[in-house]
Length: 170
Image 1 (tube, rainbow, N blue to C red):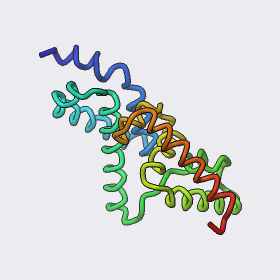
Image 2 (spheres, helix red, strand yellow):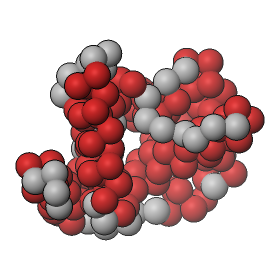
Image 3 (cartoon, rainbow, N blue to C red):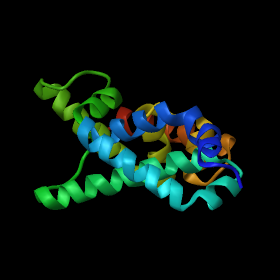
């Protein structure tokens, strides 16, 4: 078995910045992100053998980051007693304009409703690609499919969104 330092250099070091960007991008709070990142490292340590045997360990690790971040969001929502939604920056990325005006707020709501109308894998793929700016390989790993299938989910999701958003009565 390799030493902890060797495993760190092999598994975590190459994607450490991407892991932190993923966690921070979802949580939008640097302090919460630092806490969740530490939790992720503990999870990785517990699952080290499984991760090491996985055909794409980096995708597996990024999936752990996403899952732990969403768990933290749900926990935060329960403690605050309100529904969790995407942060304003993520919404602005999807909508294409910053919020603040009534028109932008309506457009934001329309886009979020359109995304929620997509099939689950397409919606996740679009959010991971557009909001998280993840590569298709990582998206495929997180969705449990190939890179080509991840590209297909993103492409079909965007096409479906264009259709939904161009015809508000659909």
